[in-house]
Length: 235
Image 1 (cartoon, rainbow, N blue to C red):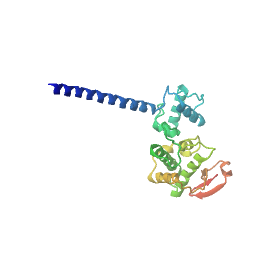
Image 2: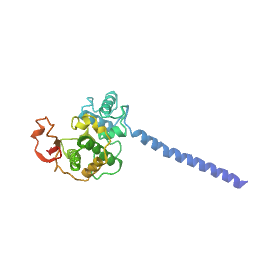
Image 3: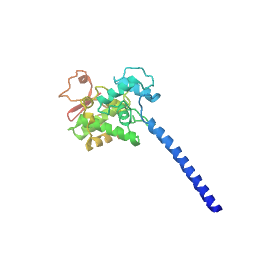
């Protein structure tokens, strides 16, 4: 009889312990999942960073308040609409990647040597830019376009993230005409990886243009480094 009572007591204690563990593990998980997005009512440094990026690119004209309110919400929706993203006013993983905004602790602006999801997101976005800008170009020309993006990331006159450079207003035709939203092919992905690993066929160029279609007199004032395929590359 005594052994049976002990068994019942042990079973109850074990059940209570398992319930406690489940409660402890679930709470932080829910909090971290909730903290992964920015939306109406969010506050803090990430919201300030979001507002600065949107202001820099001409989507937001309000104060850098660190408070996600009506103006920030409308600016995010405007950015999403212009860039082929789901228009919901919430900065989740896809919108954050397009903005070059890191919602976690790693640096989404890493040019090379990064790891994990942020680095893969950079490679994929860079490949999308290559695919939109250089389809039909020789392989070295695709690497060259990717290299220009990475050279701009390092240059003080441009945003310091891959997404920031690519989505800078009027910087790339593929963004303006929506081709940035096409899925990149295997060659564009390989070209993006090669550029991320340090191959720069342009020798440090931060501009490229097609001589057959370029109409800007300013772009023709840039020193030309090299011609690859239909593009010339310069500084």
